[in-house]
Length: 210
Image (cartoon, rainbow, N blue to C red):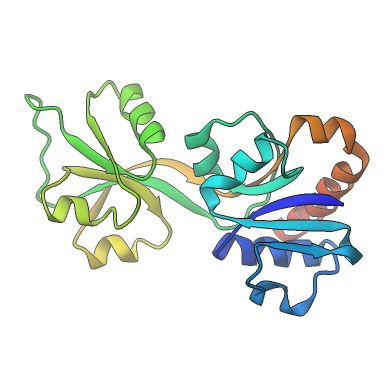
């Protein structure tokens, strides 16, 4: 069996739909299953359901042969995996946001809150700006409202959450989509099977773009 690490949530639902369109026979109740490991023998696959940030770790360490991970996670985690296909699902982007009253003070290193400290630090370093990064695990929009940080770096999909909390976008950092990633050793051992998955998914992605 090919072991596939999948993130829970929106990416999972879109990736399952993509696999079905690629001809993989996943049962109708697949999305409603609460188990963390699901064997689908007719598709020749075993699925591991994980938190999005953990998917590249499972693939890097070989407990999963392939996985689906957001580009944001790939940039943040910098895992030793092959990124073989842009699935063009779960499109969003990484942005810098703040309160409308925010003004840059060059005399003080501003504080930036983010779930993505490595990505945020790298971005501001490239901009030549020295900042203090504060790592948070959720409710990033809260940081400027309570005075914890001057700005935030977070994923933006529609911008509705930012607006609901009175924040405005200042800069776009990078567009984000979900990618198919592969363990390097698995790619050598199961190249025929993995190449078939890549080709079938690529055909669906390209067909939907046209």
